Amino acid sequence: MSIKLPEHLAIIMDGNGRWAQQRGLNRVEGHKAGAKIAENVTRWCADLGLKYLTLYAFSTENWKRPKEEVRFLFQLMVDYLKDRLNLLLEESIRIRFMGRVNELVEETRNFCKFMEDETAECNRLNLIIALNYGGRAEIVDAVKKILNDKLEHIDDAIIRRYLYLPDLPDPDLIVRTSGEKRLSNFLLWQSSYSELYFTDTLWPDFSKDELTKALEEYSKRKRRYGAVIDNEE
Image (cartoon, rainbow, N blue to C red; front, side, top):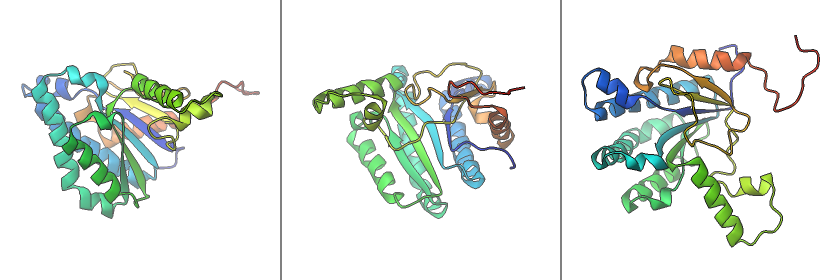
């Protein structure tokens, strides 16, 4: 693909429930279909040469959903990743988690650490899964750590050092599916200068063509970072 690619693509995977409802299916069927698309997009991004892909899997607000659905979502994630561990290793895809993972049940916490340890040496693509994640929560947690360390001089660099994954570059492009046009508490600190792309396509219908459209649109944009560029047409 002869276009300018982002180094870091982040995706708000929205529309699983609506996709299922439109077909008269249980919401969990939408999550199953969405998991397959997440796998496809990960593979496509790795093949294209992107270095970082962040998927918004479960937010701090998602606990408001029915308990049965929440349990299913976590079990789906565990089963899906466990079944594909060998494939991830073959494709050299590193798994990392960001969010309040420490608040999850012990079995899930242990699984997350296991996946991170097993794929730690992979370097083709960093797949970051935002799990029990909220942008406001991340900033609050960073401030708490700063206060605990009794730091007096605080600037952007200090705050970044205390984020969940301080080495993670800011997302160049954030894509949201399903027609909603908001960030929904996703990467609030990191998205200051991210390009945003919204599509009406529901996540389980997100195709390689849809990904290509988003990347082509990103490629056309001029990223100014607040600066004025002289001699613009």
